[in-house]
Image (cartoon, rainbow, N blue to C red; front, side, top):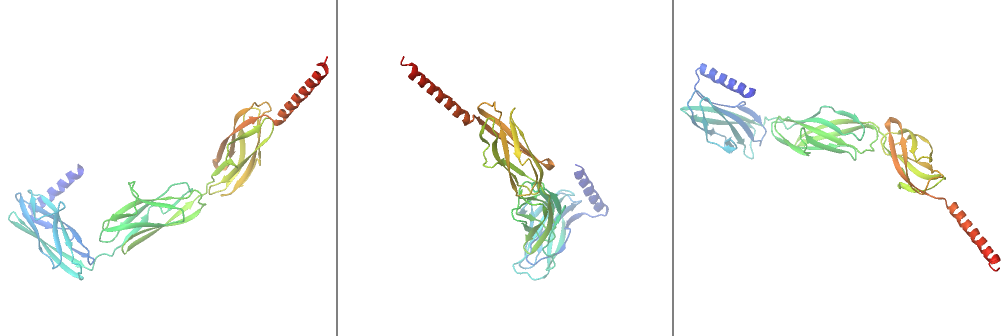
Amino acid sequence: MVRKLLTLVLLGFGVALAQAQGFRGLSLGTSYPEIGVQPGESVNLTLTLKNYGLPPGVVRVQVAEAPQGWQASLIGGGRLVRAVYLAPDGEATLTLRLQPPKEVKPGTYRFLVRAEGLGHTASLPIGLVVGQGLPQRLSLEAELPILKGPPTSSFRYRVTLKNESDRDLLVSLEYEAPKGWQVTFTPAFSSQQVTSLPIKAGESKDLDVEVSLPKDTKADTYGLTLRAAAGEAKAELALTLEVTGRPEVRFTTKEGRLSGQVVAGRENAVKLVVKNEGSAPAKNLSFSAMEPSGWEVKFEPEKLDALEPGQEQEVTARIKPSPKAVTGDYMVTLSLSGSDGLSESLDYRATVVRSSLWGLVGVGIMAVALLVLGFAVNRFGRR
């Protein structure tokens, strides 16, 4: 609302100034009536046609003069126009589209646009200097060219791409990064990933460049290169990524099974494996267990000073159920903890069975009983 009010005030001021100077009629103008262009380049110029102090009516417009071979068109609302209606002190905006012939030589080419109506005429000379346009040029600039964090982080650079030439370009986006890295380009405030995008002459666009790393990327400083290209226009931007180390421990049984049989009253060995799948050493690793009442759990070794990235270590958990444990399933939680808040655990289902020795004793007792019974029958049964 404020912007509209300001526009009306400025427009009224301009009209009042023109009227105060005694000007009544038509005005036809453009900001840059003579510009340099590259050979073969098409040009669109914005023209403003204005009514100063005249009654409303129709004003005819045309390109009165154009060099041979050139196509000159007046466009309004996306269509070719030959006339414009103007209200009192009103204005209209037109686009003058100039298209050169296939083989145009360097030099200065003159055009003349004319507006006639309401008893007045306005003319606007246009000059194109072919061969003096700006060369195609792109630039890339990062807001923060150096980022730092663990490999599991999401790294995002804000990059500004600018078209420093005088023509619209379709820019392709590429990158060079270490193997396994994923790099995506997304226009700022958008969710659509792109590999190319159009950018107008003199325009800048912000891009979010997101980098994802393999989780086993080692701690180090890495370089990343971004490239933008459109024909002869090319730009490169070097970025830096400082990866900090982070341990990630996998804690499981050697065979991958989380259940097994244990004998009541005896030590039962369960083989475990600890592997560091992170990018920094895992330090001060210790083991503990949460077991049923009356049970004992010991670890060999009890501690590990350090486990380097990619290294694994075998650990034995010796589980001894209570001698009074009845047959059935029990849950034993085996845990690992280390420096920097490192913690992992697994639940092991232990199925208690009775010792086979007691079975043999029972069989022996039964055999003795049968022998005694047989002896008694043979001796006393005949009497």
